[in-house]
Amino acid sequence: MAKQVTTVSEEGYSSTNEIRDYETTIDATGDDAPDTLEALLAAYASCYVPALRVGGQQRGADDLGRIEIDSSGELNEDDKLESVSFDIRVEADVDDETGEEILERAFELCKVHDALKPELHAETSFEGGAV
Image (cartoon, rainbow, N blue to C red; front, side):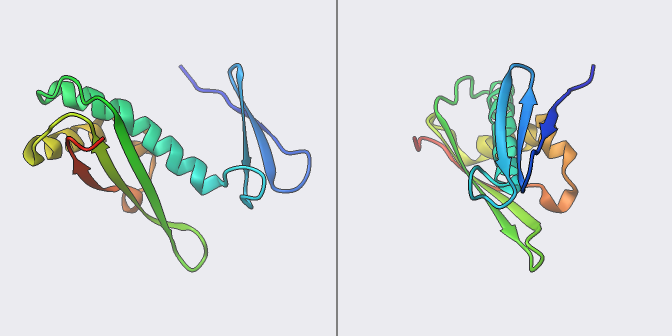
């Protein structure tokens, strides 16, 4: 199985992406749409959400409820992504030890995490009973 995306740019630095029956716009300058790094952070966090839910189920927290992830990407002097961090808050009352186990398992399950070079793997904080 393969994934297919068609990206078209008529001019400038903005691109339209056709993904199955969906269309998204990414603008490298960030003027007219999310920029490329914001899109990457969104994809990473969006992939991490279901990984957290499955990891939670596998580690005894059957329903995490609402999950909120604040993603942050630090840039180097060349405006390239240098590091990523996630501040994660879940509705369920999860103790710190179980939270760490869920985080570890979620990283094993997250496909975007696997696609990133190791220095861009997200540093995390986890707070249960928070949203």
